[in-house]
Length: 223
Image (cartoon, rainbow, N blue to C red; front, top):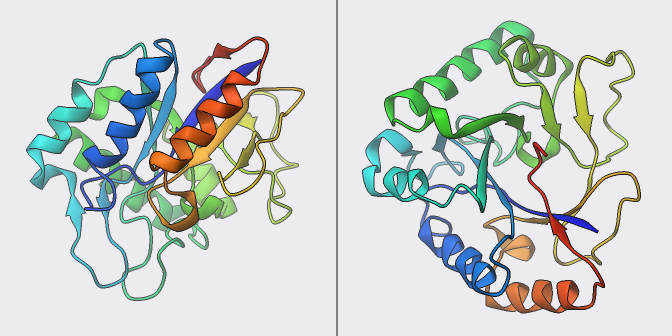
């Protein structure tokens, strides 16, 4: 059984940051080969709160830069993640192609300036899994061709040919049963918010689940 642990919104916000990494290292102490895919927004903003631009948080960037490569890979998770004053999660939901290109450029620019761009695999998880056709095409044109999407009925990517890889894992939040996708991996999906929070209780739940399995192989989303 192939398992990946996927965590969204990993950023300097007080609800995230190194707090979530402490839970990761708790799991590593039990499973030294465990694999985490961390999805990182570049300038996280929740409505009218402060903007957590990674360029302003050297300690955070240094921390993720020095995470063990055998346990951690990184995927893109937007620029602000939401639309300031309007939505926590809709940054990529309604974008036209040209506007998406602008946001992707900002996203890449922050990562470059913060000295962490080299960490990222060409993986993108849309904030709240909401992604417009225009944004999708812009991301592919910018070299991001692996998408970590939940199998939601709102998405129709029937026009995509075999050159673009779409991984529709069963990305079920911890509050739901962990479900096996027979064709791919199990992805245990967590974030830094509300019912998805990877905290001590969820770590215990995840350990219990893995202990119940006869055979486990930990995988990155990139293989």
